[in-house]
Image 1 (cartoon, rainbow, N blue to C red):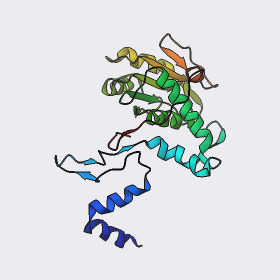
Image 2 (cartoon, rainbow, N blue to C red; image 1 turned 60 degrees about the vertical axis):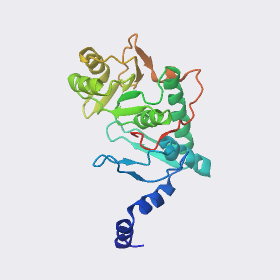
Image 3 (spheres, one colour; image 1 turned 90 degrees about the vertical axis):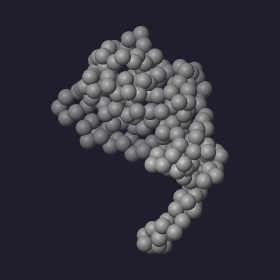
Length: 233
């Protein structure tokens, strides 16, 4: 089917077009319709459905027999580090981190700020939040303390997930002092921070900090939580 034909199909019946498109998603509870326009121009989509985006992004591929296929290719021109993560490995990593967050009291609807460098663990953190229905706000790693503080006050997160450092050409940016400064400046104080220690610069942890792997020790992996079809993820 050509683009012109697809576009004409949407024009002829937008509701039917998007309900057909929605069949590509694995719903826990399928939507009864695509668009709610009762409060136009504020529109809502698939809001009576139940779904989990982490399940659609990860778990269903494992269940379909594609667990050995590569989900993430990491190739850092700065550190020279390369790795590949399969869907099965990703599912295990995400469920473990999500279980750790859940054990610390993070539930559906809570916010989590993610302040990470561009490493695979940043994706794991995002998917872990989505898995348990938490709403994640990604802040570019290395942002100044005052800029991070603004985003903390905006999101009012229960937790922050951060890397110990970022690696730029020719120098290392320590994230922990920036994170601590941001929390000092912010009116809202998160309950705890999860720190992913990178070997290039390990951070000194404070009383409100817990190390990435330590968070996951001794807790069961988290299942996917059903959220409404209009969940922020």
